[in-house]
Length: 267
Image (cartoon, rainbow, N blue to C red; front, side):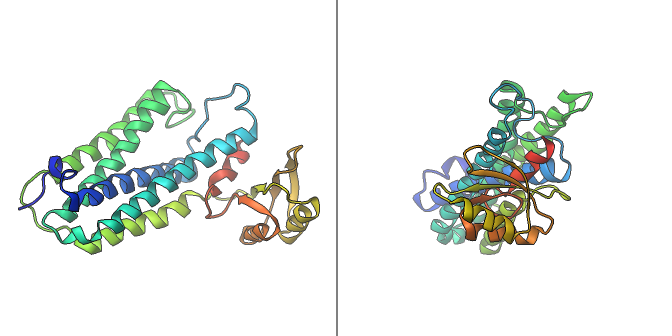
């Protein structure tokens, strides 16, 4: 006997597994958006269409993109925690099917929410900025990656007495996709040398300049408060050294908010 989606959250043993699928799928949707549209295609960024004060300020743009990816990390790790709690339910009839079905629904739900909220209600960006037919690309993304994935997840989660879909192996692959997708989504597009650095409160000027020297960076811009700096760093493999000198967040790396560098590159 397999499990109906309508029963998924009423059976205690499967509740964590059901939420794990939704959260992991939703987080993957955000990572997919960041990797494909922000990095590879470079069609838009979070606040492309918001130009009124204070959003034209590069620091506000950076913070907005950073908070977006931070939210995706929180959702994804919440999904991983739920998956860990519900791991024993993978052996239950229909457990693995529920996990995959809900992951597909969560992935599609991200794109539906992004389309309705970001593209049409708030108007903060569109899928393909600069296109002559913005609505075409919005609707294409909405139905291909949103509606279609939700429909596929709903179909898969129906009680069709289907066989197992990989059990623990499938769950491990889903978790691996999230763990790999997060850092990759945090990377900027290729050929971007600009690094935005947020230093911890109380970091002394001597610490800041020691960090800049350690990465052989060239100063492009700094906030009057001295806590935000834009650097040109040719050797991107050295940027992690900034953490040793009081940095709190360093962009252009596979760390949380590492996606921030491309925002400055477009400014």
